[in-house]
Amino acid sequence: MRATNQARRPEETAETLLDADERARTLRALDALLEGDEAEQQETFAFLKGSLDQDPPSNRKRFSF
Image 1 (cartoon, rainbow, N blue to C red):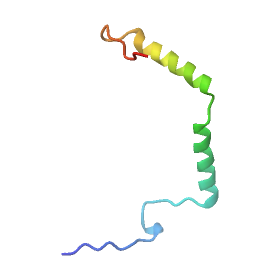
Image 2 (cartoon, rainbow, N blue to C red):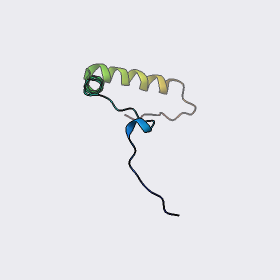
Image 3 (cartoon, rainbow, N blue to C red):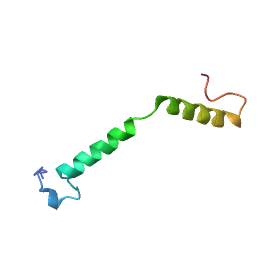
C-alpha cells in the first residue's frame, strides 16, 4: 500500500492561519520582547546568579564568572 501526501485545505486541518493584522501584531510583540535595557538585564542576571549560588547543594559555585 502506498501512502499519498495530498495537500489539505487549512480548514481541514487543526492549524489556524493568521491574517495579516494578526501576523503584524504577533511580530511587533516578538520584537518588543527582544528590546530591552541592557543594564537592567545585567542587573537581573547578577541577582539571579547570586540567588542560585546562595544556597548551593555543594561547595562548588554554579557560575564561575
